[in-house]
Image (cartoon, rainbow, N blue to C red; front, side):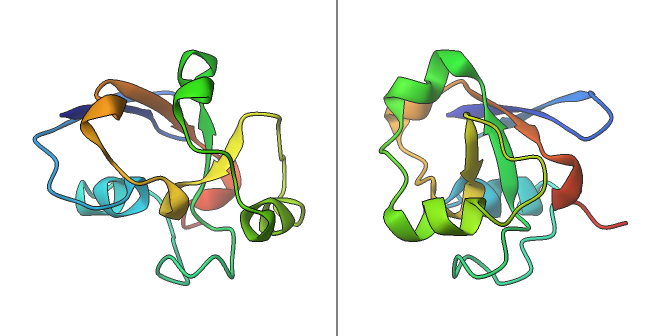
Length: 106
């Protein structure tokens, strides 16, 4: 399985042979600039990513809790998600995301 990630500078990084459970874990395990301060508890919004529109319908919809947390992040877009809430499955092979500017360490 692979995931394609555009970092905050627009550089494309390909993550391969992932063993992580969630997208947030895969991005952090790869050493990319993603804070994920709460560790996946949906209480901080610092794992904010933008999902490539091609993949939007392949994901489970955001829960009410995730949607509420996304309401408080900077630069929310219609394709915003919390990467901690995206479970990596074989159906998402090739998933493409962009790290939100506010999701990295400053």
